[in-house]
Length: 140
Image (cartoon, rainbow, N blue to C red; front, side, top):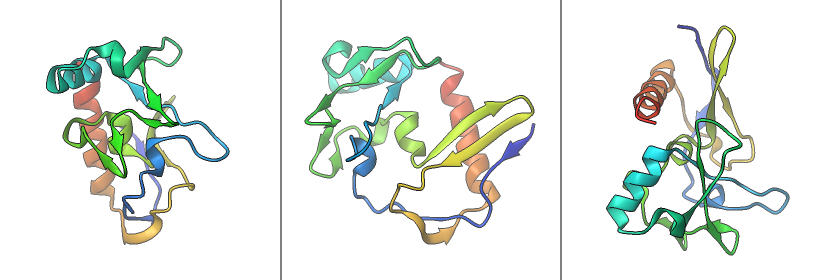
């Protein structure tokens, strides 16, 4: 398995919640796997379509998180009400995992204020994220 990732990249989450909603120049879509919608629904007692809308455009994601005022419906101030069960896309931000013809590649958003702050990420950090993605995606 070929896993590529950014080298010498420093990152530390700034807890700014900018990743939880639309930016000034771009809308943010929080895509959800069917298994994540079920887990959130079961944990919160909310009906799936009260917090998510169906989306068939980006597989394997089948839903899109709803927003209130341009922010995720589960965001209050800068706190996530479902942090412990937040979707994979939220767990990974500012990183995303892309599958290519010769393996997988982690990319990152330079718009995140936590980039170039904190400790350098190691190969093991990306391997851990990759294993988490494999585990979650196998149930979708």
